[in-house]
Structures are given as structure tokens and as C-alpha cells.
Image (cartoon, rainbow, N blue to C red):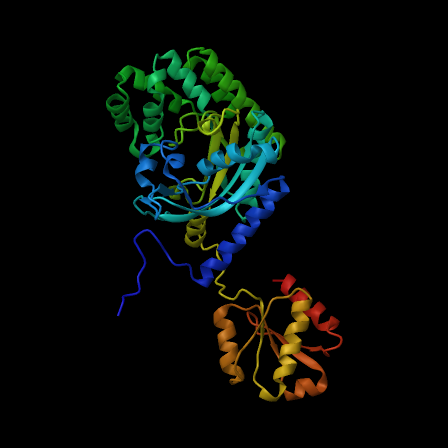
Length: 444
């Protein structure tokens, strides 16, 4: 026999995880749509040239690639941003400008699995294409805040930076040609520490230790936003590009607060660079205050040149991605997920075979009122059925035997508290039962 097993870095999702996972996706959709983002989808497979050379050498190595039956070199998408750039270049003529989209779909990376990180995982992306407006940058921060709030989090931090500040600093140090390797090294600062980061910059980017130290002075800019903004002109040597980046970052910070994002949730961190090469402006990383070790659960930034690989049109973009599975792992660890494996909240016990059609009509009436209902498929003993309902995590159980049907009532049992109520019910007028059940569910 074949041993049932999953590949390394892949996982099955049981109902108790999949149900909250789908709810998270639905919450994300509602938040995205509330800001005017429209849904799209793109193929899992792309021509390999579409994907390679867009993220970093590391992401190129992680792409699942092969030749299809037609001999074409293809790859599985490693994120949703690169396919979006291709999509926008191909369809912007009919989409209109600016174009705001969200995309919730799986991506694949052949990387070493870690806590909350798998080789197949779902990303929830939102992006605005074809505008350089600072309002789009500000809105991105507001969306991230609304997303985490709507998912039930209060204690989280949105770290902000602007790569233009880093670009200007490197210009002033004569390191413009070394921007990519320097920023990749800088992005590892919190993981490997100051000394190893300097050593990597020297070896990978060919900079001197003094130049590396000058870059890392950015990491020493700590304090309130006002204090950091006051430090940055001196740290960047008065470079014009850096000065423009500082001004833009200040606008984004002030606009985000004006948009209702609590200032306590925003952290200016001018040392973060993000590992992907295509970012050009503001970048953000969001961490959970109660579980910072799990890493960023929502990150992204501005990429003004990515679509230029596919079209002569200038299609600047800004967006971020919610790491759904990483956030789900965090919620499991923080015990924020309810133990529910029943997709419908109402359970109807079927224990009187003579009234089979009555149970079915009862369920149909409740579903017509917009309520989720599961009917037990076999007329087993009531105790066994209620045990099943408890295990699955149903909220309410509806019980009706011969006596209840004769009396035109249904017993409604709240499974958590074991409280029961007899509620009037007839097939042709289910209003009283619907109202009672609806109120009982709303109270939970």
C-alpha cells in the first residue's frame, strides 16, 4: 500500500483550521472592497522569463520550474506582485487608471520550511497601479491597519521606511552601483546582528567597513517619529534624493495618522529594506507585539519600475501582502482560534425515523432564513448525536421527537451551557423559531 504522507513544506488543513482560514479570507475581501479594490486572478503557471530576475537571486532559486508538454520553460508563481505587473501591462488599456486590485491565492517557494512558513502558502494582496500619489501610499497603511483590526488584533506594529532615503544615502557614499547587495545585507540586520551585517556588506557588495558603518548609522536612528525625522538629514549627509525620501515618509506618516491609524501602531524604522529588488519607495512590515518572533505578517511597498519590464507605459505600483498562513499559525499559537470544525452553527438531531420529512422541512425553512444547518444523516440515539454535535463545535442543537412534533414545538439547546428552551414551530410559519435561533446565535 502507498503510505499516505505530504511533501516537506506542504500541509493538509483540517476543518478546525480551514474554517477560520476561510473566514480570514472573507474578512480580507470585505476590507479590500471597502477601500475600492477589485478582485482579479492570474494563472498558477507563467512563462519562466516573466518570473525570473524580478525578486532576488534567492527567489529565483526558489521558483518551482519545469518544461511543460510543449517544451516551454514555465514556473509556478512565487508571489502575486510579479504576475500583477505582467497582468497590468497586458490589460491596463481596458482596466483604466489608476487600477486597484486584490488577489487571494496560493503561491509556491522552494525554501526551507519554518514556523508558520510553508512551501505552498496563500497570499492576500492588494495593490494600486498607475499612480505615484502619496495618497496611495497612505491608503496602503490604512488598509493594513484595518485588516489586522478586522481580524481581531489590537497589539501590532506597522514599521515604515522609504527606500529613497537609503538610495540617497548610498548615492552620497558613492555606492549607487552597489545598491542591491547593500540593501539585501541591510535587510538581514535584525536576524544576524551588526557585525555579521557589516562583514556581509564588505564581502557581497565590495564596500569598505567605514561605508558599511555609515549605512548602519540609519539603524541607530531611534526615538519618536519627530526625533527620527530630525536625525535623518544629518545621517544622510544632506543628499537631495534622501531629503525627498524623508519628506515623502513624513507625509505618509502624517497622512496615516489622519486616516485613523493610531500613532502607537506606527514605527519609523529606516533600517528595513525588504529583500525583494523591485521596491523603490515606501516599504512596510507588520509584526504582532505579542509574537514578534514569527516575523512580518503583512508587508509590501512601492515598486515604480516593475511593469516597465513588460511595457513602455509607466505603471508605478504600491501594495502589500497579508501572510495568511503565517498569521494563522500565530493565531493558533496565541490560542485565538475557536475549536470549531462545524461550518454550520445549527445541528438538527434526527432520531425519530417516522418524522424524517419533518426534519428535512425544518432544515429547509431555517436555511431559507439564511441560517446554516446540518441534519444528522441517521436516526441514531439522541445521546450519540449530541456527543457528535459537541465534538464538532455546533452552537445550537434542535431536538424534536414525537411529543414535540405533536405539540408544534422544537427544543433549542445551547450546547456550551446545556440550556434548553421550547419554542413554537410549524412548517408553514417558522418566524418564531427563526427569530429565537437568530437571537441565540447573535448572543454568542
